[in-house]
Length: 302
Image (cartoon, rainbow, N blue to C red; front, side):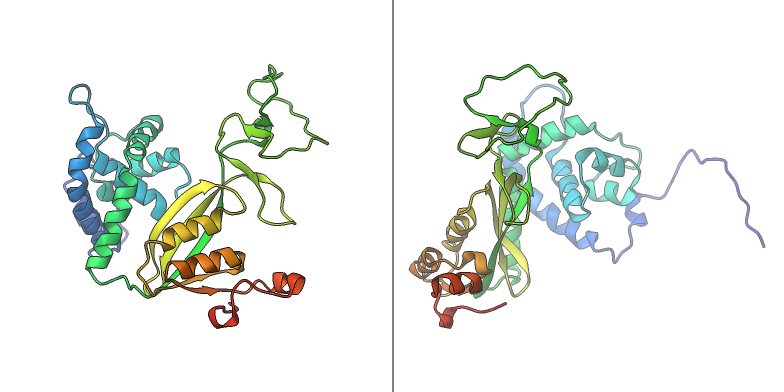
């Protein structure tokens, strides 16, 4: 029998969002863990807000929404607000009702910055790591460190000389910039819209762009991130931050890294921290200088 195609919209819905989420959905146990962490962080939220005035976005909603943005690779806050408007799963995870009004993307971004300035994101990450350790999901033996380039939200047109007076643009929205034949470097130039970004490139065959460098320390047994930092892009930032994160590792732990970490200073620094280096040999470097920073007993070709 053919079903009826009724286009009349219902005014009310009596099914709560809790029943629309499958019982075996992976976000359910994650929501429980997030609620536990947010309850412990609640005393740190209060000093960030004024006691009078119009209520802002609850910090619990902010952090749950930001976590969804990471898990589902939502590329912008504006698109995240669009998803929250019609995605019932997202509404349930954040803690919104089916008919709650979604925030403006600009308001969401401003409130997010308040949490970043208050180091709430770092405290949230540290508490999640502590929760994983309490449940026996972290080992103290084998770790891996690596870095990646994060492109800055700044145009190459904004990378100008530091000592040059600003010239009025011919087009404020998209000015014409001719840097053909000009030698640009981080020592003499800086971005006018993002001064902390650095001109950097991935390799000899890649073009230079404005980048930051992200660094992450992974626990190998369960594949969990236990530490992470963000720094300006320099040729030494990877190894410097790796040593800083390795200082928190237990004595006798093993730290793996790729060939970009194969330098004498880095390997000696790990040994000074009583951490065993497991660094891939830089074969190109061996051919050039006929020596490697790490002896074969502590290296591995990955």
